Structures are given as C-alpha cells and as structure tokens.
Image (cartoon, rainbow, N blue to C red; front, side, top):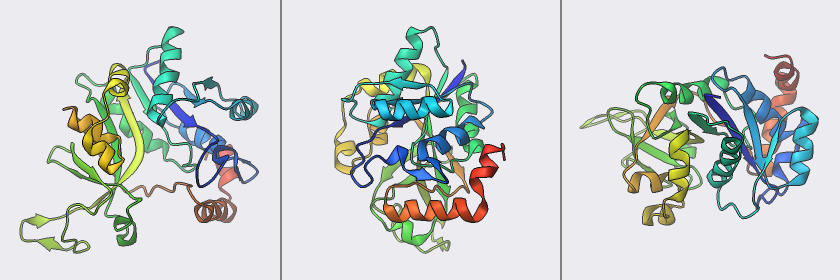
Length: 262
C-alpha cells in the first residue's frame, strides 16, 4: 500500500468517556470517521488503532479492521506508529501514513488526499498537517484552539495556543502587509519512514510548555508542510459539540448521504 489512514481510538476521553462509540444517527462516531476517510482516493486502506476490545468489536461490525495496540501508548501518534509497525510486520510498508482524528465524523476526504499527494512525490516532506484560513475570531482567542504561522513556502514556523501573530485586526492589513490567520486542524500525514523517527524523538521544551507535539518535530529541525484549506473542522470533544453534530446529521440527512457514497 502506498498510503494508509489510521484512526487512533480509545475509550478514556476525559470529557466524553467512551467517545468513539457515542451514537450519531444510529451509528458509533468512529464509524462515520472511517466511512468519510474511506472516500479519500489516495488512501489504499483505513484502519482503526485501539486498545479497546469494545471498539475492536464495533469496528468489525461495520467492516473495518481494528489493529490492537498497547494501552500504554502516550499519544495518538504513538498508537498510529504502533499500528503501522504491525502492518510492516505483515509486509505492508506504506510510503504515506495519515493520522485521522477519531472525533471528526465529517472529515473531508479531499483534505486527506491533499495531505497524501506531496508524500507520494519525488521529494516528500517529513510530515504535513492542515489549517483553516481566517477562522472565527472567537475560535482564535480560545486556548483550546491551536494556531499556526507559516513561512512563504507554506512550512510551519510555530504552533501555539496563544493568538499568533499578535495585533489581530480581523482581516485588515498591517504596516508590513496582509495577515492571514490560521487555525490548526488536527490531522497529520507522515512519510512512512519518518513516523517511527518522530515517535522516538525526546519531548522538547516547547512541546511540554504548549502541550503541542508538533513542536517536537520543529525543535528537532524537521519540516512540517501546512496545507491551507477553507474546510472548518468540526471536532467532538464536549456534550455541546456532540449535540451540534447530531443536529447537523439529522437536519441534512448526512447519515444516509454518507452511506450512499455522497
């Protein structure tokens, strides 16, 4: 397989226990993530990586292979790397690996393809992620929302929970030119050979300070390419967000549309 998607999933969410199996339109949330990701044209396989037998049983029920990982994986990235190692032991060594968040049931397949494409080229970057262009001001000012700034070639300079750059003027211009604010989207794509390298790197001071693991790669001198998109990520991390997504599914009949390939 040239490219695979891995969805790390665990039951021990602090704010929404059992989150992957919470019901949306009559099916577990992680199923919708898997179905949406499976529409990506560049992925040749989409798997769920979990330490939960309950999630594994659910995955089998809707037709997805679950790869069992240790309950001691420190991060979702570690869980993804563990799953990829098991695939490699089976003779499957993907050139590109996409870490797809298990709480985004409306993830855009086109965004996944945009992240994979550069990794299949002649000079692939170490890793890629994505960011929404000019998100809402309320989002930008929230510390739970990660922001990113890039250089002129679209490579990440820094990620932060603080507003960056400062002196925000909501779409206006500054003395030194137009400022585009970027809200980071938590999806990552890695070169197959870089993923293991990344998980073996020691945590960096900035990573610990901001609690953002992307900073580990930057502090150790690796490059992260940022794909800019109009897509507005809808993650489910609270009861309010779960209710919002459920309403979207019901109002727009999204479940039937996804199941029918739409």
